[in-house]
Length: 187
Ligand code: URA
Image (cartoon, rainbow, N blue to C red; front, side, top):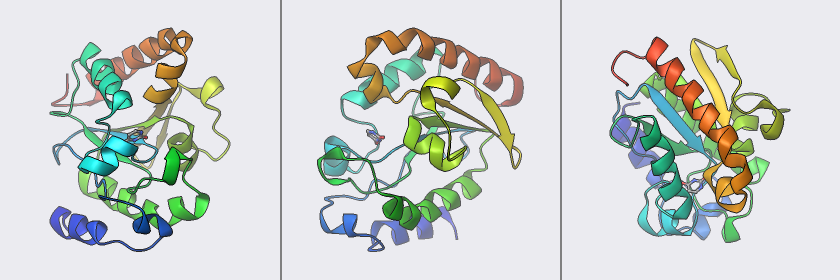
């Protein structure tokens, strides 16, 4: 399946009940040759209203975080574990994640990124390890299927708790070093 077919299929998805309350499917954005894929949890209110990932307050902070290491929407792909907003921003249920994860897996296959960065525990538990503990394991790296995986705190968590920001600064610098080591057209 190519990008256009995948997106068109995803935009019409009715595989879980989140389709009943969504305004827009938030498919993901970024260049299709991006070497780094960021994965959040699921759309919030602003994302649901616009169809774009990370455009609300957490998204503004994500943009600031990326800018520190010369990354941005022009050279990264940004997506979520679930493409439709869970009501009241609750965590996506396991059944919703399972219904949706095939889209992300197809996106990752088409993109073929060198690095996948999980934003927060939901993405890390789904993509890295079920027993991933974000407070313990953020900033660690592991290679699976030829792709390097890491996780950092979700920007929403950094908005709520600024004491987590120094750790995230270190995690960003590690990401920058890994990108310099293995990426060919990312700073
Ligand atoms: N939080 C997420 O996890 N994803 C978004 O797209 C926005 C907020």
